[in-house]
Image (cartoon, rainbow, N blue to C red; front, top):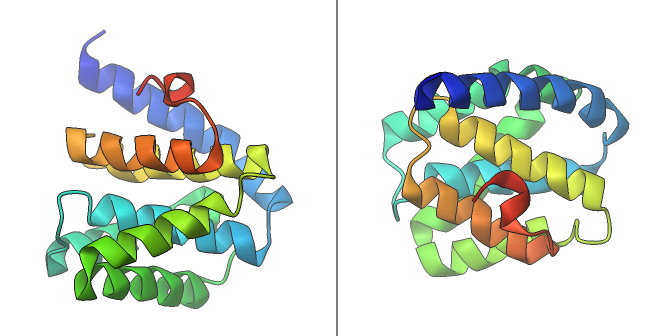
Length: 151
């Protein structure tokens, strides 16, 4: 099985697991952490171009595991984190990472947010080094080894 086939299979597996978990995690902290993670993935290379932002937003809205949340609320949170990252990348990155870090005492929710980052990062068939690094940094923020996700 080629690398892309493995990535696609892993993404489908993670999506299945997340659909079960996110219904249990329907709370503000989880939603904020998930949208912060998505914004970090969108900005992983240091900037967010409008088409990338739109594609990520579309992926968020179509992701089955996030359908337990109101789409408008998710979009507003995603846009808020993206705006922070675009305004001042370093400060926005600290803020988004700190939001994810709030899930440190909830390891199952933290893992689900990390999985969302992997799914969003790999959705275009190219989970690049910048995106992997964004998820790796989020792993450190919640105290989970990146090796758990093969990062």
